[in-house]
Amino acid sequence: MRIRDTNRMEGRRTETAYSGTPYWIASYSASKLATAEAALFDAFNMDANDGGVIASYDAHRPRPIAYQGSNPLSGVKAGGGAFNGDAVLQSITDGNTIVVTGLPAGFKLGRGDYVEVRKSTFVRTLHRITQAATASAAGVVTLKIRFALNTQVFTLPCTVHFERPSCIMEMDAGSFSLAKTWPNYNVQFTATELFLP
Image 1 (cartoon, rainbow, N blue to C red):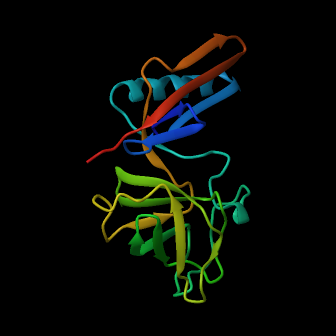
Image 2 (image 1 turned 180 degrees about the horizontal axis):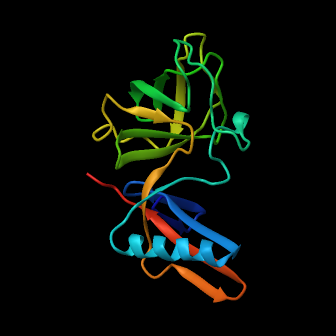
Image 3 (image 1 turned 30 degrees about the vertical axis):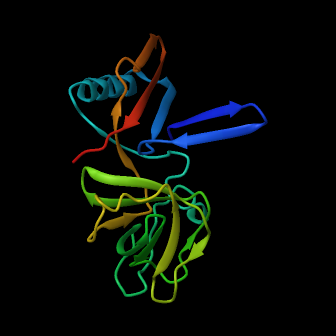
């Protein structure tokens, strides 16, 4: 979600002003749940309403598109060691350009892939990659991202994640719905990103 105000004026002039920090919103739903599955969602709702937060990710894009499928990321880092989708933020060129290391040689990232930058467990930010990129033989890649990284909060050292890249969210009050119609249950809720200190 990017907050903007657009005014259309006489003479076919349009002005748009952007304000605030962009943030993520999500809508989740599941249908035809068995009673035991519905009970898990009910317990999840209780925790969420008691101040619990969610590490939320796009269930349709849990890893880069070049590696889509049901298997988590794996392989060997260019510098040695097992690769599971975690890497290191080497440097920040500017708010929209970051350099990542600790990848397998030739690791491919495409436009629209997600990348998470994490300062700590609850301080993380989720971005989209805007230009295709491939890691060098040394496992280093420069990424162009949208929206700009907040360089006042995200300073080195940080980790970078490509397997289930996520942001921290809070369930929107009153959005949880669990229709109890035997024999199947349907659940849905919405959530909004939280900026935690």
